[in-house]
Image (tube, rainbow, N blue to C red; front, side, top):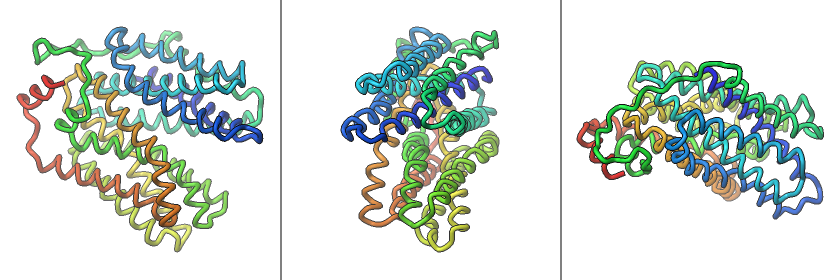
Length: 395
């Protein structure tokens, strides 16, 4: 999977650079606030569309060709920023960028699910999550090196996306997917969508955990600066608080993935949910009493909450027939993006009415749902082959 991971990493670096640079440009004086809001909504809207459109593309063209098509679309959307500052054009470029990244994640995650085996799926997903986290960090470093106000930043971002083609054209061997097994349900179509309700019947904790990851994984980086400002932290301390969460998530990915391949993943998710709930409750209760304690608690929360996604994906894949991998990845990523889009406004409203600790009412509530779903998944009867077939026949 190394060539795929390298391509995803380079594409994510370019996307992270574009996100930061577009925000800088939209923050300049004289830009209409309504235009800013419209352009900023383009990326999450495109992300939602990408989750829905990838499955038929993979069914028709296969993983490898679809991946290259997505990279081409991402490159074209990045190049658009180099040639024009026409805001309706920027809306289209961000829309295409969001579609491309969502499609890339669906293809990559379903590729991992089909290529990996039960004993190493958790480790592969943790490496994938680590790759994307490192890419976001490297993107910010490149923005700082090139200069946030540099006129060449868009060109550098586009060049980084172009480099994502290098693993393919360098002749590196891309992972070969196993032959499709016999279809257990005669007459069932491989490209039918496996919806959230069907997925919930097969793996309740996966559906809940992926939605929780959407609430947490990106929004913790968006909300933490607001939290730090409201509790009186300096700008430098707030930046380090965000960095602490990022480092915690990166350091924990590989150990958690290794453990999830050796222990019951439902039990892993139960422990992660409990630890995340405890960290949220402690931050809300005593986090403002000591800055060093606050950093420790944020590290614990980052190490637990940011590692739920790969464990949940690995468990969900273990419950599915291979012909549903792409459809399931698209549905789960759609749930993830819905949680992602819905969270900031709700959290900001809670913080405005109840104070800064209210941020952790929302985040802790998501972790509590994961805990309850893990308990339910552990206590209920295992899904048998006849039940699995009945669920698939209803898809």
